[in-house]
Amino acid sequence: MPRIFTINELDSMFQMVGFTRQSLQAVLLEMGPPVHLDSPESIHKWNQKVTTEGISTTGYCHRVTEAVYRMGVVPAGYKVHRKEDNEGSHWFFKNDNGEIIDLTADQFDNGYDYDNSEPNHFFRKTTIARKIAQGLGYGNYMNW
Image (cartoon, rainbow, N blue to C red; front, side, top):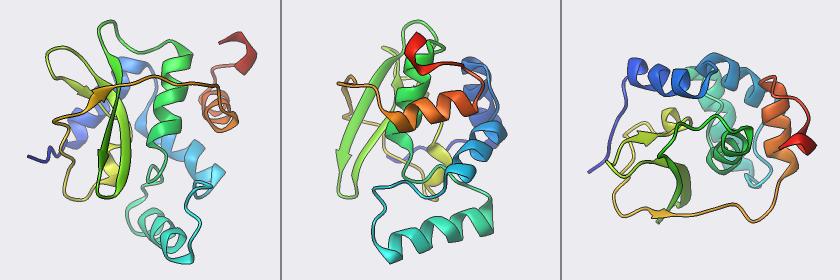
C-alpha cells in the first residue's frame, strides 16, 4: 500500500540527517533535470513539477540517497534500500522496524509502496552525489 508522507513527516526526516528539505530542493534545482531523464517528455514533467509545486527531487532518489549515505549523516540502524517497480527503481533508507527515510518522497503525488524493498549498496562514488553533498555544505568528496 502506498505511503504518503505529510510535510511534517518529511521535515522530520530531514532533521534526522541534519539539513532542510528546502536546502536540498535548492541544490537540485540549481543542478537541473537529472541526466537520465533523456526524453523531452520526462524533462518537461520535471520542469512542470518544479514550476507548479517547487519540487526538484524527481529522478534524484539514487544520487540523494548516495550523497546522504556518503556524508555519514544517516541515523544508526538505517540501511540503503532499493525497490524495482514498473517505473524503474527507487532508493531510500529503511530500518529493521520498517521506518523510512526518503528524502525524495515528495516526488510521488500518490505516495510510494515501500514494501518488498531490498537492502542495497553503492558500487562507486558518483560526481552527481558529490555535487549534492558539496551543495549541502559537506565539503570535499575525497574526504568521504
